[in-house]
Length: 388
Image (tube, rainbow, N blue to C red; front, side, top):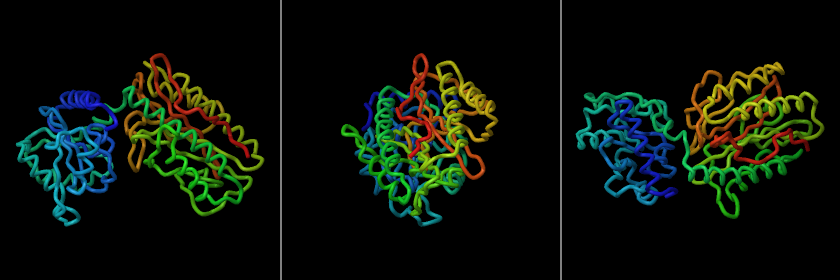
């Protein structure tokens, strides 16, 4: 386990309190991140049906996993053995038979089939087939969207979580240095990423790294005008810029960072765009403090962009913490105009400035922690345009 039993129990208490406020008796959490948060479960098994059940009357959650993955649940979770429920192999890819048939049987055995049941309607890996199985198998239940209930509980981190994110930040710093050293004219993109990945997994002498929930993103040349591009076997070209977005990971906690490197003498417009980008980031972060809102940060950020007549439609930040593929965002707070989420100590977010101008772009980002009096950056790495 990554945390003490007391911490897991505190998470459960907060989750139950939120459930009661929303009128939910039984929560079915399919989100891989939430499963980890509630129980400690950590395995690459999320491509099959699995979930955690939280009932307001139970002292522990229930982990529902494939029989083949029961060993991982016994090892990784803090749960008593009787609270790890497994389904048999006969339910795997034998449609219309489905693992949720076993889940429904279990719910009926516990006499919860008439409960107010909350489900995570928009979580990854919760399919339309899963939803239809629940509706058809539990016709007397009141099934409703829990509206990311556990995700919101996760928003404020414990000190133990913060410490893990600080470790992930150190890994991010090391990997970004390797990225800046590895990206050179004539080098294949995939070879540079191989070195970056090596650094991400090696971590530090004190902390080993893990796989990230998002691949290393590496738009280069004209690709900097697009988002979320990954490496190819093409070579870096002198006179072009490359954006690197990566995250160190420890115990599934992420601390992402993005920077831009330019090979050769850059055009002044790229230098100016990078300066404006960083000014906007710094201005936004300057008002990231307890009592202010995500909107306050966004207004400051876009105020700088307006000054330079830079247009940006996408959000510029989101909450972070635990991450499993395909995303390291928590799907709660957005640094965007109109988001009135109040910032509190130990709220953490990735503030990312993606600036795109036709056939080129620049990018920088910081992972930010709200402190008692203001905020602090997790990573310590220059965000000016890195010129080689």
